[in-house]
Amino acid sequence: MIESTRQDLSQKTPLSTLELHFVPLDFVMHWHRCGLAADHFAAHLAYTFDNRAAARDVLATVVNELLENAVKFSSDKSLSASLTVKHYGEWLAIQTKNRTDARRAESLNTLVRDFETHSADALFFTRIESPSGGESSPSGLGLLVLQKDYGVRLTIECAPAADGSVEVFVEALIHTDELENQ
Amino acid sequence: MKLTLAIAQSRADIMRSQALIAEIYNREYEVMFSDDHYDLVAKVEPWPHRYVMGTIDGELACAAGLYVHSTYVERFGLIEAQDIRELRRQAGLPAGDVPNREITKLVVNPKYRGLGLSRMILGAAHTRAFLDADGSTPNLLLCSKRSLVGSMHHREGIHPRVIKPFPIYKIHELYASPADPMDSYLILPEVDIPPSLYDRKIPDDYEIGRSGDER
Image (cartoon, rainbow over all chains, first blue to last red; front, side):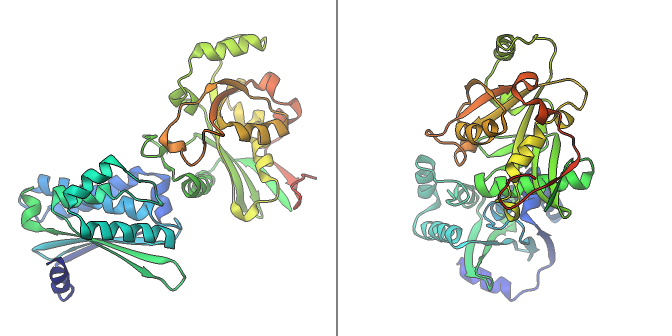
């Protein structure tokens, strides 16, 4: 279902787009900037909802999680990364792109396989009991919470880049009706 | 090759020092930084308040920071004022109203490793010019793993006094280990730092070579 939704959206022009290009090191230097950027994106998007406070809270949480992950899992913190939010009316697509190395990419791929083969609930409790963690071995707990508690449909893709690094694309799709009624 | 050691004064030099420290500490230890909050489980550390830096041909080659208050050892080391007073007494120094400061986040730009810059920046960080901004000789606190004190401080003639073992926090999981644990130390500049080092002039230029010896 998520694949067909993504395919449909890829044919459409977003109603609005907000994009941030950043150097991950800036966020490492002042970690609070992740929350500031997430709050800004969330407040900007919340204007399109009736229940702005609820929308802002959910969006700030989702954007912050994706942004923090993009910063943490960038292998070279000086290489540009991006955060993009596209509003399609019924769906919001929150996307991050960053570069990483083969080792971290393999950890992410393992995470993706776990997401595909286990329910979010089951995986959540497994990770709580035996967390991995650290930049080289993400526990995925934050992403699991987004899926389990916020109805986020998650896509993670790793593709080789020309310079030998790996480009990581993460997308969180949220249905706008569900978001407002969380 | 000429190394210029100076205290970071401008906003630009402070930002360059922070960028080098953040890059290296994040890559080696997965640490993030903040001015206004810290979380040793989430690996977020407070920024130092002052920086000393070494430049080669205008490029930042090494840096170190200084907490001038709210030191790491005081915040997280679970030490008491009495611990410091007792060590001062043992050294024959009066207790007095002495500020606590702490040298921290000593880094060398990977491009300039192998030149002995860690010794140079460690020395610069232990000068009166860097430590005594207000003219008062401080209690200099230090949080370090044991191997570094042996390989760095003792080589420069600096003799930190052990206060007590530093507690174990997640943030140090890639830094210390059971085989090389961390301790809280006290350095009393009057007696623990060689006067030739403590009184070294900053800013100043030094000739350095590949061997790492200053000439």
